[in-house]
Length: 502
Image 1 (cartoon, helix red, strand yellow):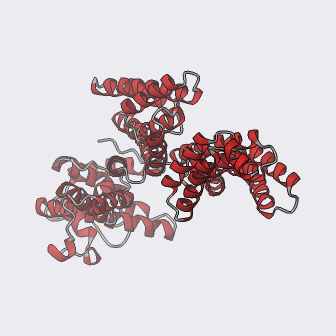
Image 2: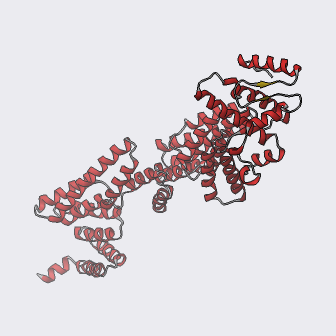
Image 3: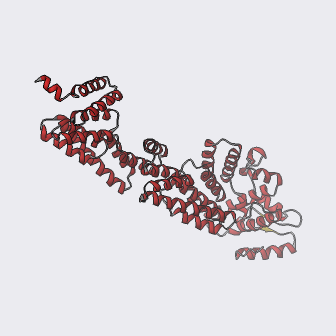
């Protein structure tokens, strides 16, 4: 009988030896050699289901799950009761992210062997995977991309070879601005499959969001070549081209000094794709620059803040906002922005800008003598004298002798401030030091506490020889010249009516 069997199965011992050698290499974890010998065994006996099952196990260890799936399916086609074949097929489906198919395979195993613990556990894993898929889909629709990444990380722990999960994770990483991570995932897939349209799309999406629009378009076009119906790649390609064209159109209008048109074009560009953070940050800053040219300083500050919110490392936006703060005399905010810039880029230009802002802040905290007199910072000597004459007469205590004590006190304070302002601004040296932000008390011996505004008033209006003075007692006027009497009589009448015309 033995001789008859050997005769009928003259190749059995040969393929059996191949299988045993494959088993030996598998035990040593030399899966490549094991694969070779299992292949020889299959070639010698192509109808043996266990050989396909063994090679499937080896391919799974080599992470070649698609090939392993084919061998597992061939094994169960040859023997539908081959439990290990069904179990391996389920594991391959699970690793590739097909939870429904995996669950069917594990159910088949449990029909053959209801107490199989491995099949029970893997079936639970398939159910868990389906739940993560549902959560990810719902979260993506709600634009909760962080939740999608979380779900995909958990799903990939069960389905490590699923490109679909990896692509979804990479896309959400890109939408979250985590471009290096997204690119790494997409590049890994492209190394295995250079024609993967989804990976090409994600790679282009990262470039698009990093404001490398020309390169991004190339990837989108390549993805569409691989999959002409890829709707996401088509939309992204269209947005990228439209955004590039609108931005360039706005830049050209700005170069041509057509600031209104540039402002409008940048506004239109911002509406194209709210998800493009980096490009939109530049568009906000560009619009702020155009707005500053149009004297829309508050809007320019808001645009710079929007740019910084999108990209808190955007130095140009800080510089533009700081300049707008300077122009609107918001010096503390300007100093804060220039400090941020100087901490990031310690250049001599940035240091100079910071010092200038700090000086203006220091100056802003002193009395603004120009405002006290009601003149501009470029006022001439005559304009300063004329302004002093007007303000001194307006606030002199004698004019407010009939007012309440509170009003008299306030007007006396203003009268003193007018005298201080005139003392400083009428003296070229003091004026220069004041304009440069120096402390007048320390450097010039000027002390407002010991200042007597009446002395300045007397000197200015000629209190000695032919002039007149105001006594410390309200309402008493000493007259020394008839012509001056009538002049100041008319002037006081005008003061009483608050009619001062220069």
